[in-house]
Figure 1 (cartoon, rainbow, N blue to C red):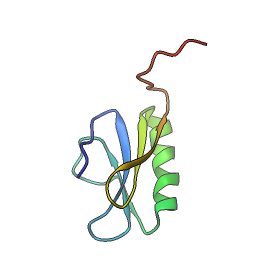
Figure 2 (cartoon, rainbow, N blue to C red; figure 1 turned 60 degrees about the vertical axis):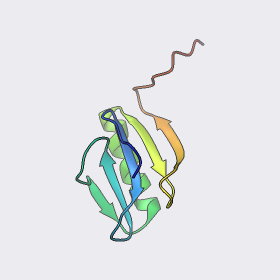
Figure 3 (cartoon, rainbow, N blue to C red; figure 1 turned 45 degrees about the horizontal axis):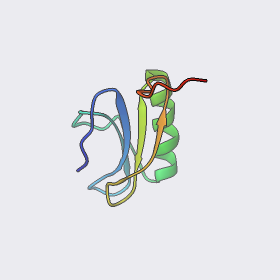
Length: 78
């Protein structure tokens, strides 16, 4: 399983089927969903409210997409 750090939320495949939304470093899911789309929608909402990085994983566990919701580690001018 990929490494998850606090300050992030992740959508990951569940070992029981479906998809989980988890806060980085947590063993327990914030939510379980039948479809990836449902998990992404809810995970994005949670991440925006918590102002965390949001990572969406593929079935193989690799990160497919990443969004920043107020906690962007990069310092970009302009």
